[in-house]
Image 1 (tube, rainbow, N blue to C red):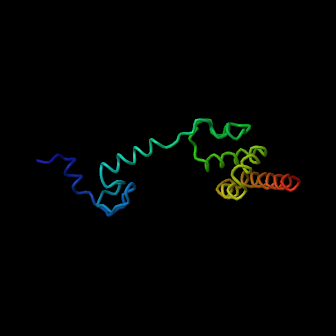
Image 2 (image 1 turned 30 degrees about the vertical axis):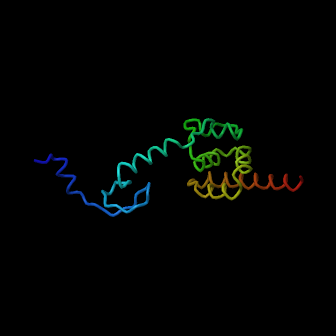
Length: 138
């Protein structure tokens, strides 16, 4: 006699999916990501080997505020979004130097609040203009 959990699991709809690790097609549940336990373990091993950031980005870049104080492993896109929302001109200029004006402009477009977007946009334009002026003089 099957247990209740096994009976419910056997009724779940299966889908054809691609394995996130090896790329093979497999028939699995909607939430399945890997075709086998071996692929799941291999993916777990590779995730644990990723390089962890030891120094926060705000300290590495020498910014005035710790935008990543709660999470040293913050994705760079989120970090740049926080810098733009913080609207510190010097911090924005340092990020423009490191990441480039195009990258910062893309991040600026993700700000939802129109007032913050206008202020950050003005400061970003000023920072880009100042950097171009300094580069032209050098």
